[in-house]
Image 1: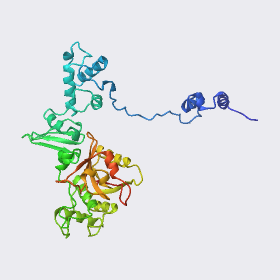
Image 2: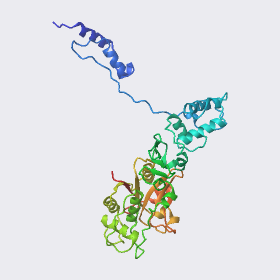
Image 3: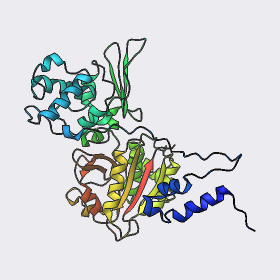
Image 4: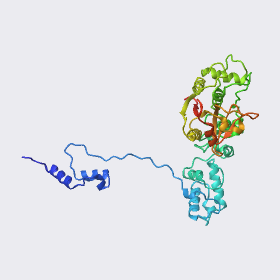
Length: 403
């Protein structure tokens, strides 16, 4: 004789009438809830608990309705939202608005420019995407003594990340996304970038800053024969300089100056003592690592889409959380034939990217103009440079400061 408990009988009846598919009941969670509804756990059993994963508060979301607002804008509802936000942030007085809520006039424009200045954004008086994001997530205001200095280095420094700190010596220091400003009591200005170097050198975005940096070298400088195949090691030399890493001290190589330093890198990379031998990518990598950098091949884009390799470099320069440069192989006549007389396998150093102009800062150690120096190269031209056709073409070597 089979004896069944009331609890078992109740559960069996529920099973007979319950739907058999989670899909029929609005999903697995609802199905499970209905399946267990009325079920009585045995004595001593631990109660079942529904636990949910705690969630972080969502990040501030920009009010994209505000984008495009400027003086005399007709969207009264959006303008009024902007005005209330500027009042909340202390840049606009209600008395200045008076009865003109929803009207974008002179007071509102001035308040918006003041807010942009406090966040180290261009003072346009127009709400663009960056301003809308800043309105949603404002940073501490820039110290009034530092605003003019910060404005000169907007792109390099980014927005403020903390309140200005006044030192016992009377100095004022404020930190930014990518560096800091210190103003001494005597009025001396010290602007540092993310690596702690002078920001005009470190910004890495303009041709002028890199031309003045002293990083560029010509592979023929100091060569007693004015003829060599040292482009890979000369590019390694420039990558080290771009990262502020020391150049190895030359040993007994003949020649002078830059040539001796480049030949030392050749020796460190296992490229031998003959400057007529074209340096290979693995030798350039070994030279960089021996010199104290952290270098590795990003990927071999042989036969692949060169634009993908260019995009990797662009994103690396836009991400300021680390410092890096690239040594890239290709053929300069396919990328910047107006600046070179060379039509064969070659190496160059790519040291920066200017997002405003959408150009890379390239240091080609064998350009045809005088005085030689860095050049601006469009992304599509850099992709054309990385052609297939020889053992080194399309190699991208990523160079970083050591951890």
